[in-house]
Length: 249
Image 1 (cartoon, rainbow, N blue to C red):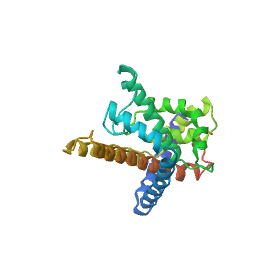
Image 2: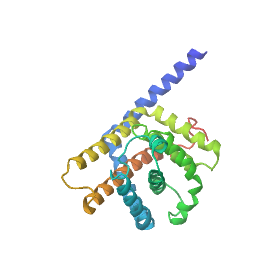
Image 3: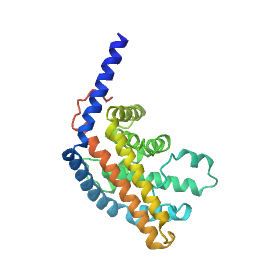
Image 4: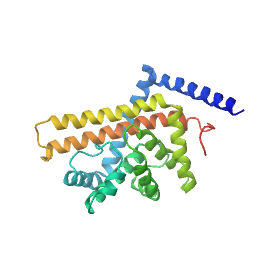
């Protein structure tokens, strides 16, 4: 009996992997990319309207003052800097990073609620859980797990059980659609490494205003685009099929 169960699971897994390859077809991929670009434009307007004059200006300043690498250009896990850093400033930097990532994800997420400042304030109760995800899940090639867990959690009622269910659902979804999501995670890493390499090669001093502002802005746009790519996939697979028994509800 266990052998048959394993065979059935393996057969389903291989079928899902084969299905995920269909997302690489030019027509399917172009739909996902254009939907993501449209989401980036829509989300950028929301972020500029509600957060540009305080959150993003602040994170740009604190990033330049403490690190100067450009926001979201680290591409590692964030627990080690928290454990081994000395003083208050690195922790302030990490908190600013968490808050910025949180509002960016909320701006991308599909919702029937009007995305005013009140919408973001209503989700602040989920921020501690989001911070745990931010530290626990490595943000390199596993970053789709992090984003998907956040989408699942924001779509569920606020509870510790749903927090664990969201992590489980994100892991299952990544396992079932591993070929596509691994490529998205890999592209995320590659683009950010190229972004960082180009800025390391430039003769311009990054601490001058214009070069650093450009570097900071492009890192934000890249991060927002890949959130949108994962969200477009999430809407297609999860929200369009609410009866899917693969996920815990």
